[in-house]
Amino acid sequence: MSDKVLSLIRWAILLRYPRLSYWYWKVGHYKRIPNPANPQTANDKFFWRKIFDRRPEFTEISDKLLVRDWLKRNSINIEGPPVLWSGTDPADIPGHLLSGGVVVKANHGSRTNLFLQEAPPNRSVVNRKLRKYLRKPHGRKKLEWGYFGVSRKLFVEKIIPNMVAEFKIFTFGERVERLQIIYGRFSEEGISADVWLPDGQGGWTLFEGSPEITRNANRPMPETTQQALDVARQIGDHFDHMRVDILTDGHSLWFSELTIYNLAGMIPIVGRDPAEGVNTSWDLQKSWFMQTPQSGWKKLYADRLRKVIASADQT
Image (cartoon, helix red, strand yellow):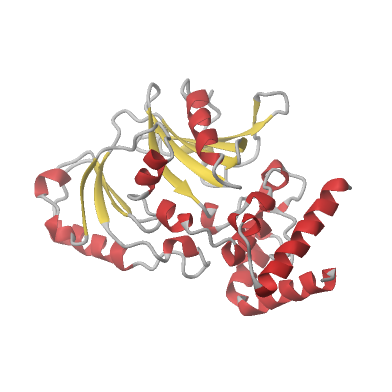
């Protein structure tokens, strides 16, 4: 099996998924033809993950309710915010649970969170919005297949009082190559964020560019940062790559979610650079696809990709 076959597989994927290929071509405001057959950047590896790495656990951990069972089964010592109710009909949510200080979520995707700091003035409007959340086929356009098999539900979760920050920790096995800390979710000042990168000496350096989602916070790390990193590394050890989201009030930690496809499957700015840590630390040989026996053309492809990766590591 020659490298020409890797090229053939690359173009077969691009032609089979034209809309997704176009998205990866334009993502990050730069134009390059993606390579999901022999990925050289983190963004291409997300593309590769969508096509090849169909790890069965991905559906369980994409479910915002069932992922808690995964944590317990794997002895991860962190609790999520209390779940007060779950079901499939928003009309069944007891009214007193919506009196404030809660968030109502759909368990099968993102941007389906309704934060309620006080009781809603019109329950019927809330119910219509929540039913819309349930109908949303999350991930279809960008092939985030981990969400496809999730049995859709709504759930009411207690908002952590006095929440200081949200950690978004990019793990590659036990390595952490990117730490994003978001502040002010409910503050009058609004959301701000910092991105921290390893300094190569066991510490962290503040990334001077934009966090891509909001204004820079330019704040010191919360005191619970090391504790959050320890939990994230424990979770990350189970995967070739996983984004671990953790909440803190400055004293304690709560689990938020695991994210398989950051921003639908890309990392801003650094995700397009082969030399960045988010790429060099992402070892595809530790993925489910590469560690699980394949058959037919996928076996030939996996064998060839394994040799290409090993050859690149020796240069």
